[in-house]
Image (cartoon, rainbow, N blue to C red; front, side, top):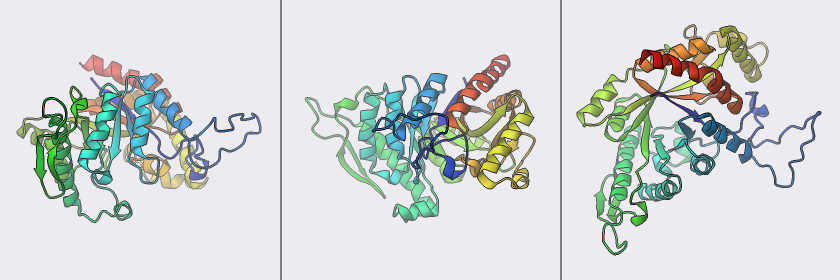
Length: 363
């Protein structure tokens, strides 16, 4: 069964990708209209309203997961995840966060509350490595190798206090989990009995380095990859082999920005309009240099997406490429499009059922 997911925008959304125009849910004032009068004043309208519209659309359209991304310059992912859990009925909600956000005991406690109130729909997506500027801003002076060791220990401790919850009969009187490690030390740790019967959040990880694959093989339930600079999907065999050696399985997913239309030409024209919004009317030639193959474009991150390489083509072409990727072992796809509500609904109506039909025929 193929699952589709969508990331919630963290800095506002708009039909236009230029930063000055991203007013829908952003922090800039909403431009006035010469046609309609906006009566939503006096506190009845705020930046989270468009975000909630996106979340509701993801759930209503039947996407498997809402992702609240880690974005140092955007809205806080834990807050977005909490909003998403309250605004959805069926979709799972993945909160992406850095292990330096707090102690693993605190993260487990926050998650226990969210699980109890959401029918266990919360998932964790750890962002282990970030860029140098973000590291400095957070006061994180570890090396990348140390960050992976910290993430491993973070998950070990979080799972330990979860599993060691309410150890003694007659009420909570301390737990049975003890740990002394490189980054954390816990004595008699464990959550209270309120966590009983609730699942530890599904763990999602990313990256293709040896450290990333080793961490996912040990702790991950889902591992998300990106298309390579050549447009090819990464090989998931090494991850599967590492996980199998530990008696585990890890589902593979793929970040996949998409511009799909009835014809390839319409999709390309839409890409060019977005590129001109971002870089001006004379910038088309620069976009042409970023095509990897006839469907794969390597400049999505330059027009507002979080991930650089995705697909531009007709609904049939993009659906077939998704089917081909499914045949390579990918079980879920994190789609993105700008503007979010319009593009996710367009993909639901015209793209996803095509991919589903093709997968059913192959099955």
